Amino acid sequence: MVSTGTTTGSPIFDYAPAPESRAIVDIKPSYGLFIDGEFVDGHGHSFKTINPATEETLAEVAEADEADVDRAVKAARRAFRGWSRMPGKERAKYLYRIARIIQERSRELAVLESIDNGKPIKESRDVDVPIMAAHFFYHAGWADKLEYAGLGPNPQPLGVAAQVIPWNFPLLMLAWKIAPALACGNTVVLKPAETTPLTALLFAEICQQADLPPGVVNFVTGAGDTGQTLVSHPDVDKVAFTGSTAVGKAIARSIAGTDKKATLELGGKAANIVFDDAPIDQAIEGIVSGIFFNQGHVCCAGSRLLLQESIAEEAMAKLKRRMSTLRVGDPLDKNTDIGAINSAAQLARIRALAEIGEDEGAERWSPPCELPSSGYWFPPTVFTGVSQAHRIAREEIFGPVLSVLTFRTPAEAVEKANNTPYGLSAGVWTDKGSRILFMADKLRAGVVWANTFNKFDPASPFGGYKESGYGREGGRQGLAGYLKAGA
Ligand code: NAD
Image (cartoon, rainbow, N blue to C red; front, side):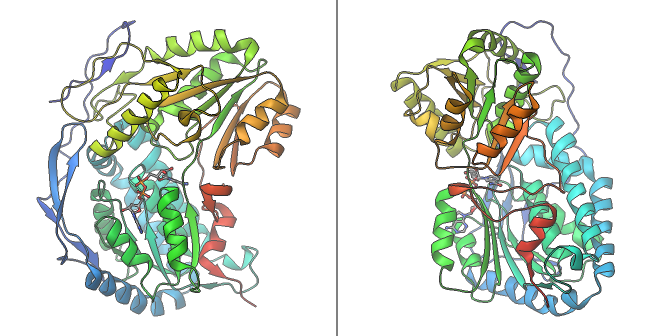
């Protein structure tokens, strides 16, 4: 049993446990694939999905083999004929219906997401699921207005989209993929990550409940092999991938020379830059949410903190004090700030990189923190004395680990911030509007937040520079990834 939230450091005051009930979710002992509007058996080796906070097995999940993937792509191809010809305003009705069902079943979705992923319920309830619904509402609005997307008077859907998503935001990434694809008249086969398949399968039930025509949305579960089979299937027209840069590169290689269109949303190592005129208390909150939100399992996490030298000491003292109040523990407790690490493999990777940080000479600090005895946990951690050459400054840790560097001038901040193979996001904290504009212009990052961090909106395009990928998701720009320009 996981303890109900442990305040790190000396508690200022204690909270009574506030557990969200899991009675609302009905987890079946086993799950099949979702093809052509129905749940069907898979023909690969089934695998288990576990609760990372307790290591309890939640369910046995089917693995899709090559023939299963082929069936799913064929179902999507058949459905494409009707779905792509349906008037946009009719497709919109399905998307609106899905959005409303998401809202109606939001508690169930949030609880299941927290159980399968390990993220705190306050995040799945207040961030993931509301933004997921917003994506369907937003794209429902586009479905009958595609001629205003800037792609000509009569833009056409691409066809069948093969979509592969990671485990850090299972529902949100699903929405980022499925909502624009459907709004533009495409059909999809989506593979959720192997450690978090359950909410996609619950979403399959929502598609049934919304009477979505069979084959418009299909789910194939499994690991990397299933993903590879899906993206290399000869009859898919579009590949949309979110995940690691290494796998993104492998996918780009595998589809090179075909006429498949691709968008790749990959890793990041964002700089969160705090100038000496920044409102410091707000900046501390932004630093904390930038790196500890979702256990730091965030592609655009502010994992490199750049502090102007003159305020570095004060900011570090305040940051450590704030980190001491973070509560680590049961994801279903409404007071929890930091939940479980998603898998044993991810925990091992975070531990290994943190050890490398120490070996390379950076100074490691975590507040005193009692971690639950079972499950996968890592305390909020900060490294100071980090140089640009350190691996913890260069590699994506994808955990609650912050690397702190300092700078003296705006030019030095820009140089350090851009000194990375990635370019997904960045944050700037300053009182001066002109400096915000100067920094936003110079930073090579797809998103630059000013005096805030980790804010998402379906109308705002998201995507990377350099090894963070190509293509945009969200906004008008995101539609371009699912449409052919029409004459
Ligand atoms: P991953 O690349 O290992 O896996 C992502 C997905 O790809 C999973 O569903 C996996 O089964 C599948 N996959 C693995 N090998 C494959 C292959 N050869 N062909 C096709 N599919 C394959 O990444 P992860 O560990 O699940 O997720 C973490 C990574 O995702 C981080 O690097 C993070 O930055 C990135 N991410 C990026 C964004 C973004 O929008 N840029 C968002 C979330 C996560």
